[in-house]
Length: 142
Image 1 (cartoon, rainbow, N blue to C red):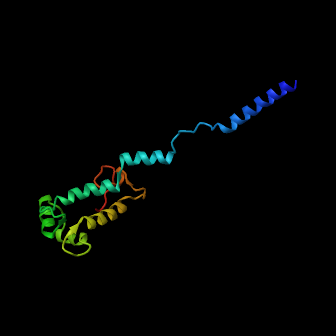
Image 2: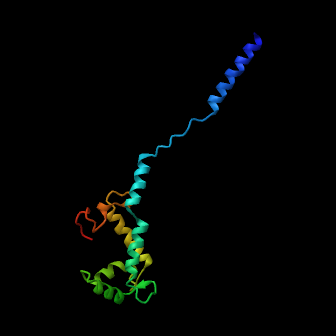
């Protein structure tokens, strides 16, 4: 009888230890905010991509390939694009350090400000409705 009691006690202890040391399986359902963010980044435009696209377009104005755009290059580029507005005024706004050239640093700073202004909900991603020129975007001043 004592032997049977000892065996039963041992089994009970083993079951209790097994129950307390075996972790429950982890839930793998994604956090809804994480899933929404991942979905947004697929369909949205993040700052890095926004800058890269705009920089590529802007640097087409750099006809002498020196890594910066002069007022003459900018004026020729804007004229070829049939852009609205005065190229000298837009160049002056972009030339933050007033050295007569717009370089990558000035362009990145300008684009970061523009991105922040367009990102109405502040989530770090431009959704279709926040991107200028998109059919779902409200008409706004660029």
